[in-house]
Image 1 (cartoon, rainbow, N blue to C red):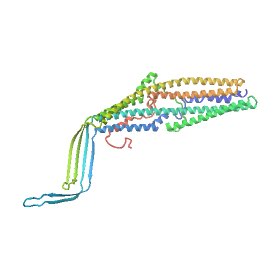
Image 2: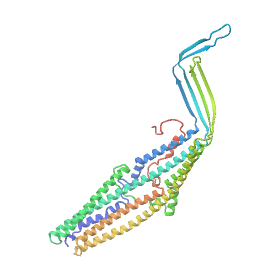
Image 3: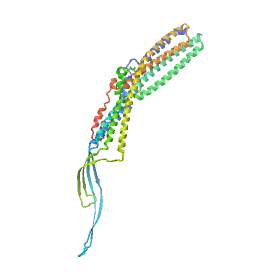
Image 4: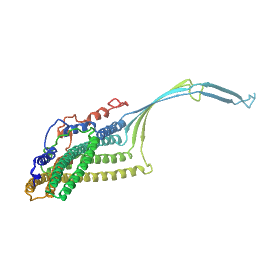
Length: 480
């Protein structure tokens, strides 16, 4: 077998295939291009969905000053002005006895322009603790919204990790398939030369052509997958990817034992904490609804100054000033208030069930993620052994083919087995990294602070304090 003795180019291409893409996805390498950490920083700062979640939280912050407004007075100013024409006729009765005085009539008419200004201030003194409970409810809603934002951050960061690793994975497979095409092209060229000198048959040439066509098909499929990964990367991370560097697992941030992970996730996962705050919100809503059955006590002050009194041409000006206390005791309001209380209690029961569901969901996700991570670790060892065995088999079959003990088909089959093993290893390494981040998110620890990313964390407390005690003004803290 003369041509298989020329191992220089084929062996070099096979060696390059063996040594290339599988290590590019897992082991640290050059940091001249994009890294996973820099991609996550970009997502944290610029992702539209994440910024939308922050804006939603800022909007929720405003529910607290809205609730606090119940403690503050309501002040209104009323101004009136206009034109009027009055005409009135007055009868003065006469006398029937002597001397006989007949009745007389007098008419008064004229124009004036009455105007006035008034100020009314109302202060609620007691309303069944509704303002207090609404304020506490609004504060719980803000805390629940913060946990929802933390959940959104985890979801988007995990999506960014997946997009980055998919790009790395598909790029490595594309490189593997392209190198495989190069090897198959060289093997087909050698097979055709051997066919010319009568060392192989037309069948061997057809087998090489078939393998090359299949290899090209796989390369085109890998190219399509890589293009799709580029588009997903651009959508989530917001930039067009250039050279991407290797990424490593983050097992060091995760609990060491499954029991520890379940305990942490069952109490600290954002979805669980958010469900706890939602229970508080529902419980306070019951108290708010019950507050409608209590009396309401308010104080009202009023001052009114009028000029050119309406309906009277003789009064030039007048004013009134009053301070009145008003007590309103509800007796029966059609039964709607009782229905609202019952409805709030049913909602409270639902939220308590939702809390248990959130805890069970967190435990299930943690257990599943833990199993996937263990499987990914074991799969790497298995695929590494598979690659080593495929390399040994290909080298042995190539040597046996040199002395006529193996056919071209055997070499092609061994070559494809090595490519498949390399693809499996790349996939296992991809899954290993993604699974480590998935477990971190399942526990509730996937955050920029935990990952040590060099980016300022979004502090939701800053905006909350800026608006909580605001009495007036329509500009937002960022001057919009």
